[in-house]
Length: 115
Image 1 (cartoon, rainbow, N blue to C red):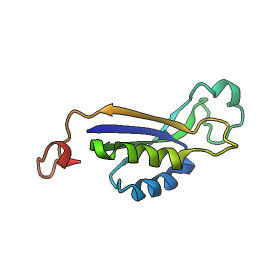
Image 2: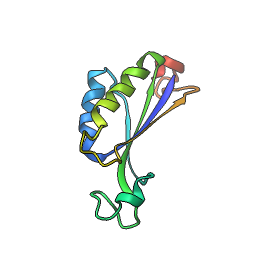
Image 3: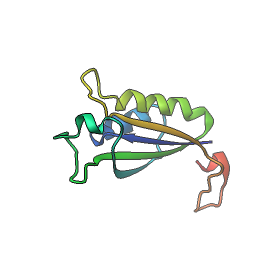
């Protein structure tokens, strides 16, 4: 099992959700977050989505997947979140972490079947 954490541009959320649904990935958690990457110094002034503290609004997705869904999940996010040829950076990041266990609270079920 893996935990996929994706940080994407808010305007790409609906496209990423649609791409994940096509890949048969239907469970995710979405959070509004703020941050900046290495391109901050070069492009911070007047950039859309910038908040007053110098941070940029992003959306964080957390998706627990079984190993056979990892690559379809990552590929769906990559395909839908990429900004295109005119992108000036800030399209986001994907982090993949080992997921030691998962527990469905309602049933107490554990492991891959709980995802």
